[in-house]
Length: 272
Image (cartoon, rainbow, N blue to C red):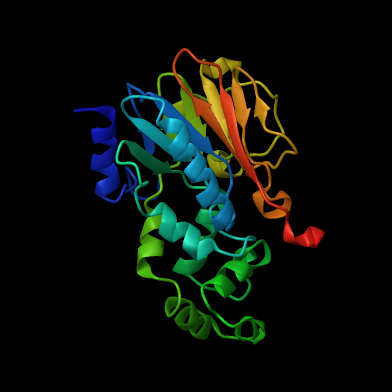
């Protein structure tokens, strides 16, 4: 079975976590002709759609299988989180391209809220309110002093089960022969199998900027940067789409240097 075939088997089955309480680590002993890793989207559907068009056009130069690996943080802060999730739940337009979506800290926080909606949830303070409004909930309802039960009923009436299931099934790490893809980063000095999910989704730049000890290129998002970081051991791709209007992807092809593909739109906060 081809690499893309194995990928399709677990994606088609819902990509359930390997064990209860722990998201899956996906490890592949082979790699496709090209991998396109995409940084944090944060509800910026228009940028995502434009970037994916550019990726599909670029991928035509490579024969065989290709992957798009999304690095997490699809929801919150930007205006179109539900549409982003609807898009990511579907396969790319090119059947030769598979898509893997990793969990970010915002997906984990949203899923935690959906499991037990609370007016005091921290998620509501760092993007969750914008996401619920994007689902069609009147912001005035969120400003009322709703009970947990009332809030739970309100959320359940607007957020589809398909989105909950998608969030629950996201893996937290993908490893190929040449790269390790995660949302936030790795904890230096800790073997890959022993990495904590909380570090993989939440760790910040409180460590060395090199990942040489892992022997592969570690590719992540999460920590916004004015420019992508590209080194042999580390690639950081969060260019702050919801603030800057910039969404960035990196291209990994055997025997070729790492390339970047980006799209940019004038952010609304800058005005017309």
